[in-house]
Length: 203
Image (cartoon, rainbow, N blue to C red; front, side):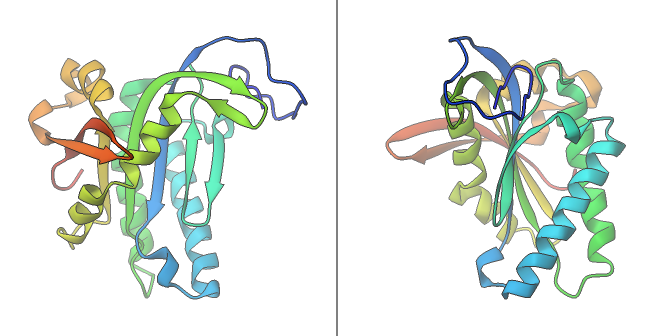
């Protein structure tokens, strides 16, 4: 797959070496492994619908996202021209609203962890290479974010952003962003520390 053009045609050789900058989003479902196969299938479908609905409401086109799906969520690489304010301000809010509406008719609540980062990527034979996908994956899987969701039973969604995304987007205060709405945390994984910020309370 080609990151720059989001070409879905697989090739035997990676593209020429180049770096492009992208926003990345990862989402993970709470307690997915404890569900039955039927519940997992329904939960996947419900999350997919909520993600599609939220992106449309936020003015984002998920059709242009390069997505790596897993059983309990997905990691998405967004086009280089993505509006960071739409992504960081509108998308989490619309996603929380979509999940809240969904949970009104669900027997078991859908609750998720959401992480965001931006950084350079390059094409590889098996997909994107670079530090950025690792960072966004480490953040969404962080124990401190799991604890945030467990400790706030009234929330359906908790959000964490990388330190660089906080500095480059949140601290602009554009779009009504307030840096004080985020608390700093250090994520330690596989011997590496990742500075990050968790969004406080409801979106």
